[in-house]
Image (cartoon, rainbow, N blue to C red):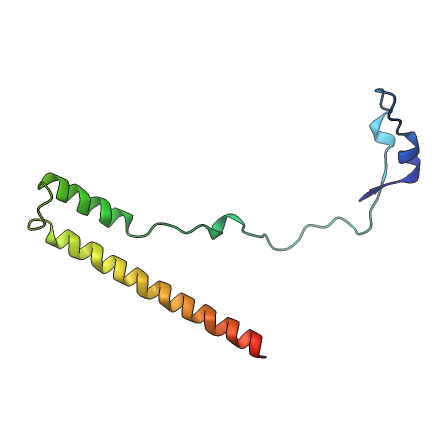
Length: 106
């Protein structure tokens, strides 16, 4: 969007009085149209995984004075959750690497 020549001639740096803004018109290089898709810029942050399991495990350890005996079930649950997430992350990165490799080769 660019101001027209008439509009730029009306503008004076030395005055603080501005003319009525409804007379200003714009030259559009393209028609202003909304796009069909939205770019998600906030989704790139990594999210913490297994937070609930970790909180339960730490609460149990704190109650038992950090003795692992009574909390073994919660510790195993947390470790299983971490393993599952690591396998999923490795699978996603391998798919991404394969896709990038195919894109560069072709």
